[in-house]
Amino acid sequence: MSNGTVPFSAALTGLPAGTTIHYRAVAASDFGTFAGADQTLTTTAAAPGSTTGTAKVSKLPSRVSGTTARVRVSCTGAPGATCRVTLKLTVTETLSHGKVTAVSARKKHKVVVVGSASVTLKAGETKTIRVSLNRSGKHLLAHFHRLKVKLRVSQATATKGTTAVSTQTTTFKPVTHKHHR
View 1 (tube, rainbow, N blue to C red):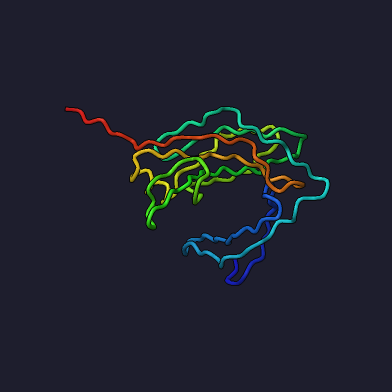
View 2 (cartoon, rainbow, N blue to C red):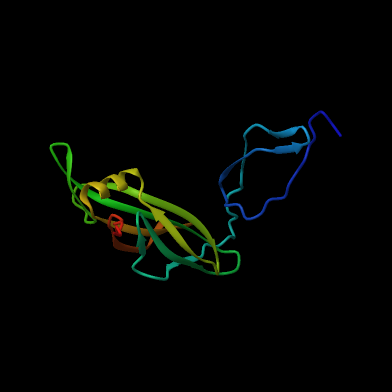
């Protein structure tokens, strides 16, 4: 038993390459639970021989429920390959005298991100990714009672930067509650 600092270590696997991770040690004893200071570690960048898989959207259109869209994405490739996938919801605002008068999924005026999500998949893995409207998206939905957005699924690649995997138009509608008498 010790009242001082006790070194420890842990082996970590499956962390994304080139990413800063925040962590803190927590010790529990009969005297209470004590959290250490915030610490960081940065994982090494992907090795030159590492491979990027190919992301595919397996079901279109996405499922929309309330303020969340769900998209099923899979990653194919050699064992050890990964797919870094980003989903982004955008609308184009039409402005008049500094106020938003309309929104659409077409590119006309000011493009606004109204939701986003990111995930890293391993080759052979399939996940349903949820992307929800952010505060701006929820506000626009409440104001216009219908929000048609562009949903873009893209993948980070080692050579091209980002590549579009899928683009579709998705519509959000306010949730209506049925009243029973």
